[in-house]
Length: 207
Image (cartoon, rainbow, N blue to C red; front, side):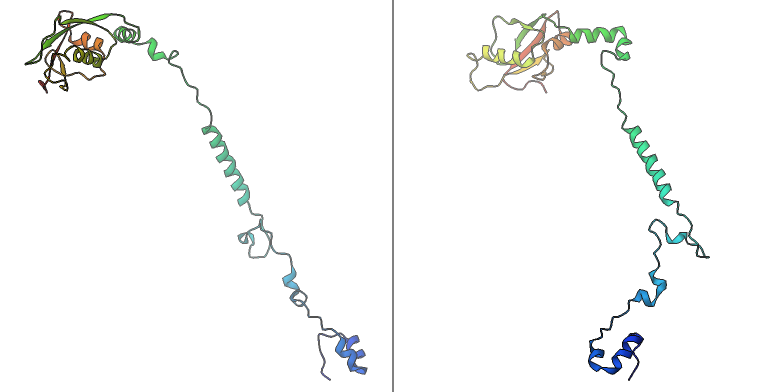
């Protein structure tokens, strides 16, 4: 009979007399930990890196986590400094407005204050365009130039040879202002003898 190292001596001695009892004995395999006790030792904690093990086998503390915590704290401090609210200075409290030159202050006050002045418009026909009688009109200071174009088109509608003709208007026979240009601003810069001269025609007369 061969000796089985995985069976205890008591079991082997008792199994010699009766083969049936020997067959009923369960062979319990041994685990690798029982065979190799060195492997069953507790592993190195995750907080300790392999580099912290020196040549003698002793474990040295790892300070990388503390450094990371310090870096995170410094990053958080920087973020908090960036998120500080900024105070806004209102336009009324601005220092620049109180130190404007007199000319600039005069221009700003003139542009912001309401002006109920009436502008005198003198209309002149160019080429074959029909004449207007009378040719002098009054218009509000803050009216756009498009209002004057509509007014002249309505006045000349019956005198135009073709009802679909477009009316071209110019200032001082020089340029065609933008329709949204304020009449008062044109009068301030291009008035002649306290009148804004507006010429009109049915074809393009000036660039």
